[in-house]
Image (cartoon, rainbow, N blue to C red):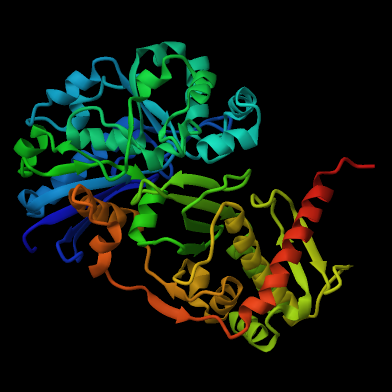
Length: 532
């Protein structure tokens, strides 16, 4: 390992993972702990406990602490040189929350290097099982919050998202209502990210702006807690949350516990931890105007936005590598399963035949547009298959090859429309970074490139959150000297160019984007109309 190492941590749903990079951004070490396999005593499945109501989903907080103990011991026995680590940062699964009991800060400050963390912190939490992002038991609290701020759009304008069951503010409101004793015993409410940072700093750590944007509590423009939102959720909440800070903040030196137990350098700095999605944006090295498209079971879009316009769909977060700008997330449920269904129905189950259909049909599909939502879509909230010819007349079906192009064009046109609704703009320097299963299909990527009129690159993202945090650790040290994140990651491996838009793509898709948006609105209105 060259002089100087930087650690990136990821406290995700099913595992804790760490990556070390050197000064040249080469990955020099990797390790992970799977909760179910290596910590069976906590009885989790997929790292979680699903309660009998099937809506409440929690994870044991001590499992996360013990996983960190085990992974640090593994690193030590492998001969990892902790003394070379100059800085570390990390990510946590978004929205999950941890409840530190009164007096826990004192315990964190006085940890004995002779004992593992989990033995010393076992009485430090007012809730032993913490709500996580998979929880959907707070519908009532969501309604109350939206009502308190005069509607869903108002809440979105303030916090970047309308009320969602998994968002932390609504989870806190439920805990205050159903478990007031635990709430009153709580001295500090942390996100999974800021809780994990505390284990390294040896004291409570602030929530960063980016992960704080996933709580329905942070005013994303003012970068401070929104009083009306706090008041709607629980009393004394501002005091329990503590301050919010920029995501590149240096929180301080690592605690003496880690210096004495593992041999960390006492000058090693802890940089603010953030959420896993913001960390992935850093790991994929998005810049202004870029867009990352993950083409998986669901399709997810990561966007870099300068001037956000929050909507009822999607989420706006403060940007994790530039606190003056923003990022957005959009999720589309009908992703790869929908593509596979259409492949089976219209291409004899063959991807080769599917690709041939895309190659042999006209860009713009002769004006035919299709909407394919076999499961209830999130963006927009509607279901069913809808086909329209060039004159906007509804039709029952298209010829097989056109059906395939209608699906792929429709999926990507929808992504561009909803991205632009949130304030995203294609600029001359725009790059599209494609990941996930369908990113291996060049013909699907060609349609993506044409619809956005921008080049498409492919990237490896297996460890994007961890990598992003190792990069953020380096940036945190340099940020005080006004060095940009883009300068820090210059040495990282470049994404591979997959395809560029064909000549005239903008002229073809300009009118189709407008038509698709109007037809989508029509479908949504009809699906929400009361029956005659």
